[in-house]
Length: 66
Image 1 (cartoon, rainbow, N blue to C red):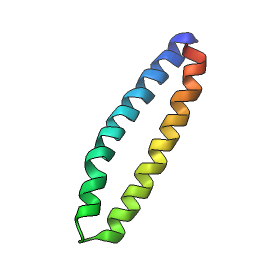
Image 2 (image 1 turned 180 degrees about the vertical axis):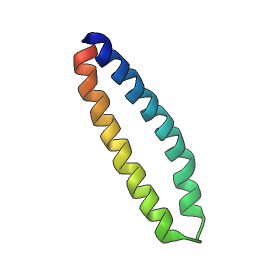
Image 3 (image 1 turned 135 degrees about the horizontal axis):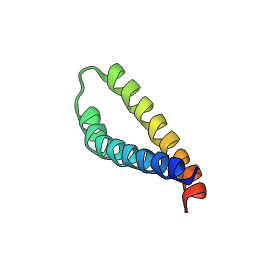
């Protein structure tokens, strides 16, 4: 059972790192581009929600792995 949690932890951590990199690059570009602000605002909100969910998931999984 421990290996399942380890795999889930590694996948969640990888997703968190990738999403963080995308947000670090994408959010300033979205704020600097005046076109399609409504779509950009929605993507920033969804990305932020996904990032927060991944942070909480990694925290919960680290309890079982570490």
